[in-house]
Image 1 (cartoon, rainbow, N blue to C red):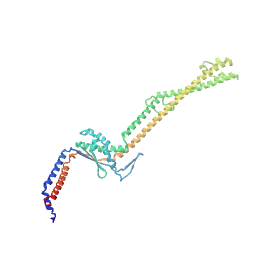
Image 2: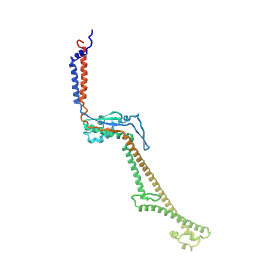
Image 3: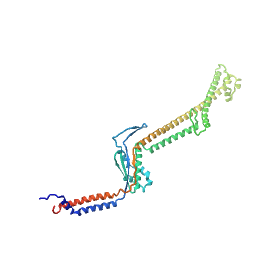
Length: 390
């Protein structure tokens, strides 16, 4: 018949196998101490961030609307951004010259960990060989994260500014063409506006040159047409024999231009007058055709000038409208970046750790002690169970 179980007797039997309990415990402690001694020293710096629930929604109407959404946890969108290349690059750009050694982006990402905390908080931890490096990198990541969030949700400012520079270059090109045009043709021909850098004499000189040439050509054509009609009337009367029209219709100045005069024509008979008047009509027709061609060419040139002016102003105005539109969008972009970027804030700044986080001698030896005792007790229990008298 089996004897009843007595705890005190069982413990005394276990104590008889104290070596089985002691040896695994000592071995575990020695192994833990060796591993801790071989483990590289690391320092961990932590900073606490807060990502409050979304309170504002931006709409592209240059307004911010209040929206309270208690269901969404915005940390789920923010936490992955901590361990991104953009965040690490911005962080290294801030503190790269103050670190004890050079770090790569991959090394920073490998040394960084993120953990959610109570409420809307989360913690960024960075491990490094030097305590100062860990604190610098942790704070740099905390400062870079809002910029990355703003770039993601509001647009990259550098890309926007690059587009704005291209638009400004386009406007400057057409604005210079407009200045050259006005300095060449003035602001006449119905143009209005001020011209900087060109004297008023130059403006009025260019303006009057074009206008005067058009006026002179037009008046010459009109004057020559009237004179031609008068010559034709006089010649037609002489040829039809319906009477002798008065030579007084013909202008002395115009006759003198072609080497004739009334005093020389009046003594001649009607038949004799026809020959010089016919020659005069032919010469006037030839001059009139030449003047009309010159006038048409000048009018065509003026039309080209006006078309060029309209094209330049249209292109210049288009680029100017783009500049104004981009200026307005830049205001919207900055407001949105402000709204989105401020939603992530650093609550507590990372401090320089006073002791290394790795190796953790206390934790390692404590775990080794517990594991060794459990292993030793297991061996002692097995020895008692299978030993003599069991």
